[in-house]
Image 1 (cartoon, rainbow, N blue to C red):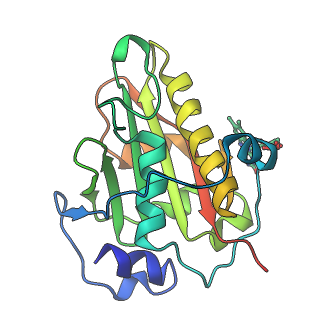
Image 2: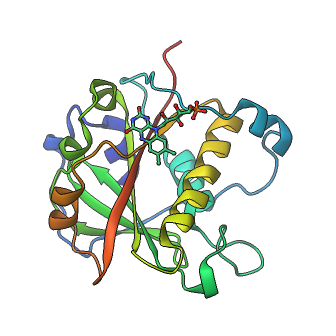
Length: 200
Ligand SMILES: Cc1cc2nc3c(=O)[nH]c(=O)nc-3n(C[C@H](O)[C@H](O)[C@H](O)COP(=O)(O)O)c2cc1C
């Protein structure tokens, strides 16, 4: 089902069946070997705003994007450090059918609502062409924003390695997103990151 959702992207999402909050979608195991050498990926990292609206992000790539951002590695650690190990960050995937939270330990997505919140991130036109929308939230103290930065940088490097376009963005309606996504107390949305294949 997840595959379907991200294949059709935002164009025909409304045609898909509606899932309720709490719906769980398993993800394929991330491929955790290979890829571009780290130094090359750092050389290639950039913000890119051109997205092929007709080319979806497949489930395997989605799985790996979420895992590099906020998954659990072979040492049983998060892929990013957090202050005092608080792990006080949330990662959401926005789709036309609803908002999904990434559960790192379970490596799965859990639906938190049936709302299409992508328009709340569309202050810049190019956002409408991106097939994948991530939203990062955190607790407002104890390094929360640093944790978000670590996570989106991991995604930037993964995207550089895979030849994907990505840009992190603060130009979003944070108040509305905070209202629409039920976050734990003192947590708030920090940035959006849109991802897709570049236009050839
Ligand atoms: C916290 C943060 C917020 C940003 N917000 C936006 C944004 O709202 N829109 C946008 O197009 N780019 C945004 N960017 C991307 C920057 O414009 C970009 O990183 C900068 O121009 C440097 O380009 P580079 O990432 O290719 O090195 C943001 C970057 C960061 C780190």
